[in-house]
Each structure stands twice: as C-alpha cells, then as structure tokens.
Image (cartoon, rainbow, N blue to C red; front, side, top):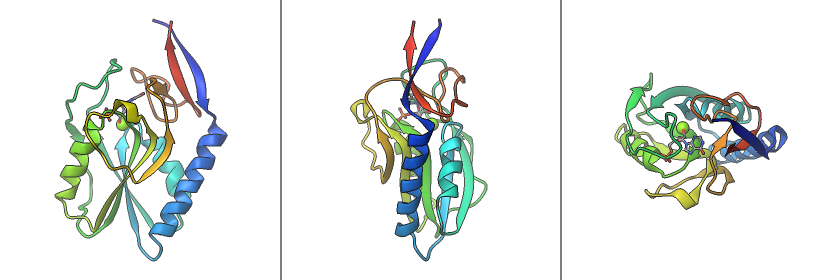
Length: 174
Ligand code: IMP
Ligand code: MG
C-alpha cells in the first residue's frame, strides 16, 4: 500500500514550539536539575531538540516500551523492552514522549516510574490526540494538540518508516 504524506507542522514551526517549551521548563525548574526520560524510539528527536533549549542542568536516560507495529490502532499491550540505566529516587523527572494517543502506554509507564520515588514526575509530549483518549493521563507540557489523524515524522513512524522526516505530516493511505 502506498502512502502520501501531507505536512501538518513544518520543521520551523516544530522547533519554534520546542524552544518555547524549553524556556517554560527552564523557568519551572530554576535552581534545580532535570532528568529527561526519552521513550524510544519516537521521543528521541523531540528530546534532543528540547534538551538543547533547557538552561538548567539536564541529564538524559532512555527506555523502550512496546508500541505500534504495522498497525494504526493501539493493542493495549505495554511491555518494557529496555529499562533506564539510572535510579530516579529524589530526582526531578520529565518523561518525554512523541505522542499521547489512547494514553495506555503513558498511564502504565507513569505509574511504574512513580514507584521509583522521584522527587517530581511530569510528562512532556510533542503531540496530543485528546479525541482518542481511553485512559486519563495528566500532560504537563504539550507541543501541539492534533486531530484524530495518523501522524509521521520527527520521530514518529508508520511501520518503522518516516521517523527521519524533519517535519510532521499526516498519512494518507492510497
Ligand atoms: P498510546 O495509544 O497513547 O498508548 O500511544 C502509544 C504509542 O503509539 C505512542 O507513543 C506512539 O509511539 C504510537 N502512536 C500513537 N499514535 C500515533 C500516530 O499517529 N503515529 C505514529 N505513532 C503513533
Ligand atoms: Mg512513543
């Protein structure tokens, strides 16, 4: 099946928005350190750009959970494929995600991370699709609120393709 990608947010728009979020986080955590947790693989492009825009000391860690395969609907199955390297106890943790869709992944993940006793725990997502929410998740920082469309680019994939697009686009299945 061939796909056509239509631009939703340009690279310039995305980077401008990330710059604003970075400034907001820098203000909110003034005098503190932040530990950014990237949810692989989708959150990686966003986390790198965001980390560059934060002016308080930043530490990075990565984890990987099971997500979409070739499907465009969530299976509801969440499995930790790669865990964090460092403990979170007493740290200001911000989970950095590409997108909150049904909320199943984040709800599970945040509960699990809470158990590791961070000083604070927040969620930062590049994209939010509130129409699709099945499980309630509190989002602290949002890049863009988007309609219920399948999105690729800037880290997001369709069947592992298109993550490297420098912009965000919707997928039209032809
Ligand atoms: P959840 O449905 O909120 O649990 O979303 C889980 C994961 O599904 C996200 O972290 C993304 O990796 C993936 N996902 C959800 N919506 C999209 C989309 O529109 N494009 C690409 N991946 C998506
Ligand atoms: Mg993801």
